[in-house]
Image 1: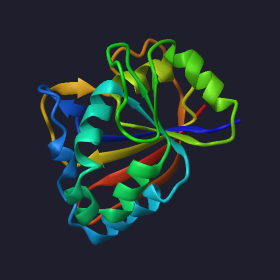
Image 2: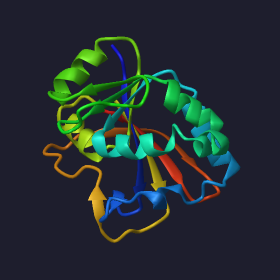
Image 3: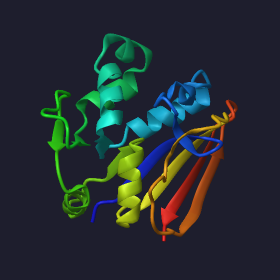
Image 4: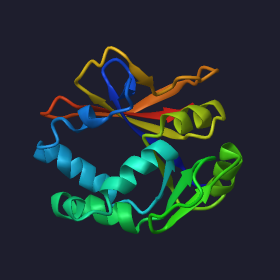
Length: 186
């Protein structure tokens, strides 16, 4: 059975986006060479990427562009060439190459995908993470805590109705102040 990992950037106060939906604050400290190596190492994985519509829209505006290929070629190649699924009830088509659009039954579709062997990673996509957490379908959470307090914003687990026990499996800190916390769902 395929493993599903949620990879999430959050502020110190638990937000994945500010009140306007902006996530630029998450890129602070990107000039840290060790952190960049960590990001590039993650990008070398061969799993499928899962997005909600909002995150997909942000990603497709940047990764298929020449600046992305120039600034971060390893990640850009992976983002553009890898298989992707976007979950949206409002989109009519998914224009980014190697992307499948799923319009209904998020949990049911993820259950089907988990029957395969290809690992999957949700990037951002707060509502998708919340729904799949409630459905008990996420196996691992990789949380990058960014050293910023937003004061208010969109909470990553907003709407989760049940407690989910997690086991800390790994931590890693970087010079830029970011801390990566890896958890396994119980």
